[in-house]
Length: 84
Image 1 (cartoon, one colour):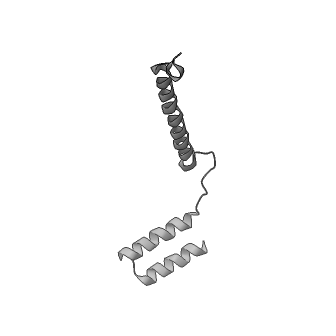
Image 2 (image 1 turned 90 degrees about the vertical axis):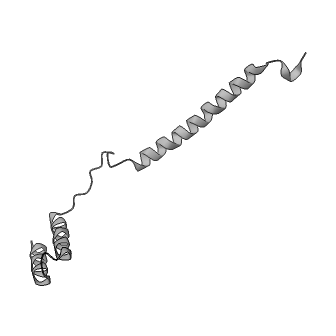
Image 3 (image 1 turned 120 degrees about the vertical axis):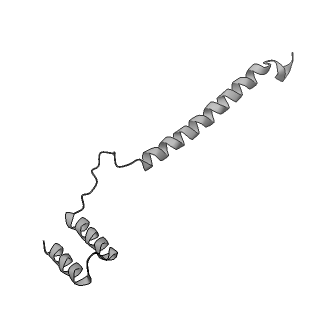
């Protein structure tokens, strides 16, 4: 008898709730997807190990940059590290 107005506010309320749930699910899935892509290396793959001499060379270079050792000592120690 009333055509489009027969359901009253019940239909609109259900539609609004479903709209909010739908977009919440879309945003939630997007956030979860970003989390899966950007999470740290806890994916079961071990991180590649760096050789110890790379760390030693980095420390040696830092000491040289701070002026703790001179160029001759730096070059001699670096050559020693690269030989071993």
